Image 1 (tube, helix red, strand yellow):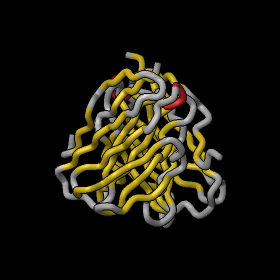
Image 2 (image 1 turned 60 degrees about the vertical axis):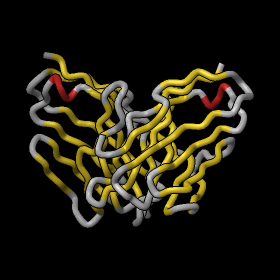
Image 3 (image 1 turned 120 degrees about the horizontal axis):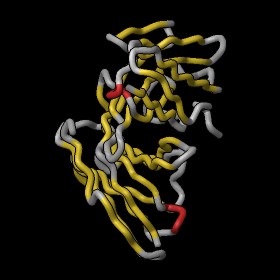
Image 4 (image 1 turned 45 degrees about the vertical axis):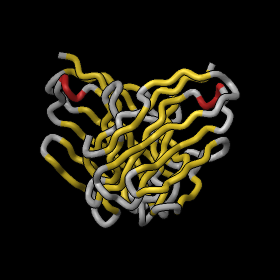
Length: 112
Length: 111
């Protein structure tokens, strides 16, 4: 029962271009969404979040968009840099975050 | 990283043996979590704790037990390891504004 889905296992983009990572969820009770970034041999690190009362949140080169009616969120990275190459996990929770659900991850490769 | 450490970082064990993984935090956070990461599944919650001696099951708790006798330590035990428990295990603590802060992980191989 995967409530958070990242259907693209991998994505490759050119340096300087936009990276768009997608995430879909099935539980309409989710109201808090996060993106984590993970480098090899390290734990995931928080990147950006959005609550269901918003449809967009921006932090520097990173923007997360939330479409509640479609149960879809996306992470935009502009411009993409080689250091952005990592696995990105989408996560969602309902109210308190004691059962945060994660997607399977998307491996982003940014080519110089 | 951010006051959370996991030990050991790597472990190879035989099927049927007990294994304990340790998570230690210096942040005095109430909530602590154990996740496992597997290809195609992302991160799945095994158990979590909301205080000393207060724990609850997560999505994939079968075959695992946990204990929290001190605020700073959260132990994950595999009573009798199986090959299906070969995985990377991450401990996490709740951060007020940043979701979870994760440890660096423990890579466990059951042979």
